[in-house]
Structures are given as C-alpha cells and as structure tokens.
Amino acid sequence: MHRSAIARTAAERPSSRSEVSSYGRVMKAVHWLTLLLVIGAFACIWAERQADTKNEAEIFIHVHQSLGFTILGLTIFRLCWRRRAAIPRLPVSLPAIQKLAARATEYLLYGLLSVQPVLGILYTNASRHLVNLYFLGDLPVVLGPDRMLAERLIALHDLVALGKIRHVGVSNFDTDQLAAMSEIRTTTAAPIVQRILDGMTTMPAFVLNRRLDLLAANRLAVALYSPAYDDPSRPVNLARFCFLNPHATTLYKHWDEAANSTVAMLRIEAGRDPYDRELSDLVGELSTRSDSFRNRWATHNVVLHQAGAKQFHHPVVGDLSLTYEVMELSADTGLTLTAYSPEPDSTSQDGLALLASWAATHDRSDQSTSL
Image 1: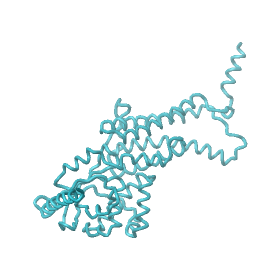
Image 2 (image 1 turned 30 degrees about the horizontal axis):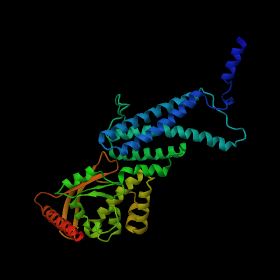
Image 3 (image 1 turned 90 degrees about the vertical axis):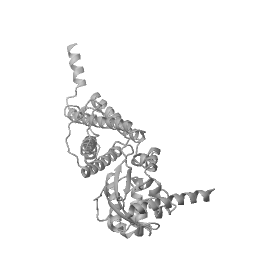
C-alpha cells in the first residue's frame, strides 16, 4: 500500500520539468481565464463606444481597466508559477531555431499581456483620471497629468492591443475588425450633439472626427465653410478641402498656418491609431495629390493648438477674425466640437451677423427651389 502511494506520487510529480507532455491544471486554468478576461476587456471597449450616456460609458471603462489590472496580476502569477511548474518539452525533431522562436513567441505574449495594462494605467493618470478597481476604490496615482504624453501612451496602448490580437489569433477578431470597431462611434454625431449645435445661433460650431470629417455643423458653420460644402462629396473633409480645393487658399487668410495645423492633427491621429485604414487611405491620397501636404507630412510636426485665432476671407461677407476653442466630446470618443467666436462689437461680429442673414436667406431659397 505504501509502495503504491509512493509510485502514484512519483507518477504525478515528474522528476524533470521536461518529462511532461502538457501543461498542468493550474497553468491551463490561468490560460483560459486570461483569454476570457482579454475578450471581456475588448468587449467593454466595444460596449463603451455603443453607450448612449456618459455614465454608461464610464462604467464600461472602469470594468475594462479592472479587467486589465487583473490580467496583469494573472500574467505575473503565471510567470512565477512557471518557475516551479513542469513545462512540456518541445518535439526533439524540431530545429533549434524553431524551438527558440516558439519560446520567444510565448514570452512575447507575456510581454504584451503585461505591458498593455501598465500603459493603460499610465494613460489614465496622464489624462487626469484615476483607475477604479471594480468600483472598490482608486489605485494610487503613479503619473502626473501630461496631455502630450497621454496621447503617446494611448497610441502605444492601442498598438499593443493590435499586436496582442494578432499574436493570440482569436478567430473572431482580426486587425481589420478592430480598426472598424474603433471607428463605430466616429462616423456620425449623436442627435443631441446636433441639437446643441443648432442652439448655438450666434457662432459657427461643428464636430470633427479624427480624420477631420465634418460630421455635424450648425447653420453658421455651414455658411462659413460654404466653399467646402460646394463640393458634393460627403462627408466634407477639411483636410481634403485644405489641400485639394483651390478655394481653401482664399478662405484661409493664413493658409500656411491652416495647412500646418491640419497636418499636425492627422499626424497625431496616425500615431494614436496606426491601423486606421481610412486615415491611412486619406494620408496616401493627399500625399499623392498634393506636394504641399507631402512635404509637410515628412516634417513630422505634431504641435497642435486647442485654442487660438483664425482669419477667414469669406466670399460673401469678406474678412472675419475669429477665436476658437476645441473641446472633446467625452461621450463620443474621437469626436471634437469646435466653436468660433468674434470679439464683441467688432467688424467680425457684424460680419457673422450678415453671414447668418445670408445663410437664412440661402436656406429659404433652397427650400423654395425644392418645392
């Protein structure tokens, strides 16, 4: 009886880590749990971009962050467990270079699983937010606020996510689907956003996505950018207008500044999401058709101003000097609202009033023509 027990123990616990043919139960359980958590984390991002309210979106973000932190913990546990667990031996017939590649691939996965949550935590802190762990409390802040650093961190975070999907090879996801998923909420503006824009009757205001597609605008913004709207292509794209439409050099009094700012915005977005196929297609089109764009793109300028002043020369009302502010729509990731305002009691304020009158008359003319 005693000898039988010893024999069973010896059979269950191999004398050498290379003598087992498969991973143990603990490693298998951690593997499948990690896979489920990874799928859950991506599902939370998808759900966040489908959320109808800011509160719903924040709940999904908190769960996503909590799952990421859990994945980090499981990965560390997995690496520690490997040091004492029996590891299956690779086939003897496998060439040495392939054995090296197999092990390198395995550790690459551990690296991806570890790095992405860390980048997510750092990005959250750099964006002036805290990481809430399963609604139990906030994790300590490890990084101070830094907008430019946050943009680089989220770009790396998304790049690692794409690498993870390619590496794991989950059949229901590929990089094209993920890129498409990331744009679900950046091709249209919510109805409430349009209502807010329509309520801003004394200043031009509009919503852009990361490719500078003009997704929504109030009447004054449409009138201000009427040379761009004259092109029947929809949605209006301010990058194409700036570099491919000859009227842009007239509308923008300081066209060089407008062109530099446009390239800087696209450069930042390309760094944030290098797998955005539509953005890549836009950059390729502009590089092919515009020497001015191609030369600016090669300078790698990423200096961007979220507020400032712009000068326009409108074909109907003449010169306009307008200050602007760019605001992110927190419930619509990737969308920004830009509003222009003239100085009080200025000729530009009078010009906007004239432009509003022209826009109203233009709208009535269009309606009567369609009757």
